[in-house]
Image 1: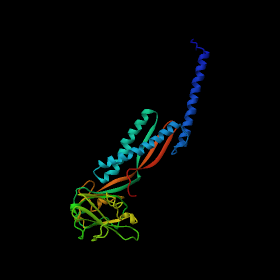
Image 2: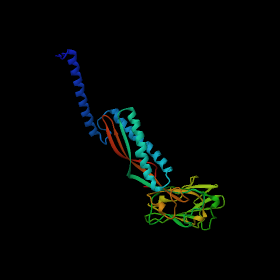
Image 3: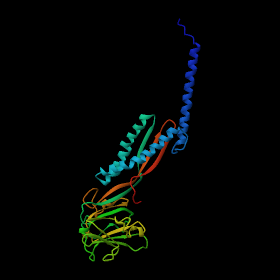
Image 4: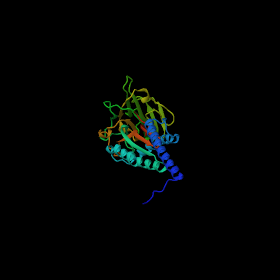
Length: 315
C-alpha cells in the first residue's frame, strides 16, 4: 500500500498563498469589469490614471493623423463614386490595424477606428488648371458655376488671372455675378486690363476701378474680396448665403481657378467633367470625417464618435 506523503507546514503555507493569489485575481477581475462599465464614453471616469491618459492620447492621435490619411486617399482616387469607399477601407482597414498593433505591442490594449459615413461631411472642389478661358465643359461663355436652383455655400474661391488674357476697360468684360438669399442686390465683380494691369470694379461696363494690380498674373481671392496688394472689394461678405454664381463673358478671361462648395452632385452636371478630368472638373472631397473610436485596457474602456476636420470649408 502506498502511503500519501503528509503535508508539512511549508506545504500548507504554499497552499494558503496560492489560494490567496487566486482570490486576489478574482477580485481584480471584478474591479476591471466594474470600471469598464463606468468608463464607457467618459475619459474622466475611474481607472488607472496612466491608462486614462493612454485613451486620451489615442483619441488625439486619430484626430491628428486622420486628415492627412483622408487627403492622401483623395489624391489617389480616380472616381467620385469610389472616394467614400476608399476612405472607409483605408481608415477602418489598414489604419485601424496599424494602430491596434502599435498599442498591443506596448501592453494589453485594444484600439479600433472605424469610418462613420453617416457623420461624415462631404463637399466638392471645382477646378480649372489648364490656363484657358473660363468656359464650362459645353464651351458656353456665360454660365452658372452655382445655379440659382441649387445655391450653395462657397469657400476657397481663388482665381489666378492672366492680365494679357483680359479685354480693355469699357468693353464687355469678364464679370462674376454673386447672388444671395436675402434682399441684397447682386454683387458684380468685373475684371479688365489696360494691357499689363488688372483692373477690378463692381459694375459691368464701369470705368470706376475699385482695385488695380500689375503683373503677368494676379491672384484674386473672391471669397474674402481681396487682392495680394491689400485692396479689397465686396463679395460674399455683403450677401446672405447660400449663394448662386454666374460667369459672364468667360471667353474674355484666362487663367486658373478653384472653389469649394458644400455637398456633392456636381460631377453629374453638364458644366463639369468628372474627377480629375478635363477642365473644369468637379472632385468630391471630405470636409469632416466621422470616426468611431474604441480603446480598451485593463481598467478603461473608451468609446466615442468624433468628427475630425479634414479641411476648413463651407457647411
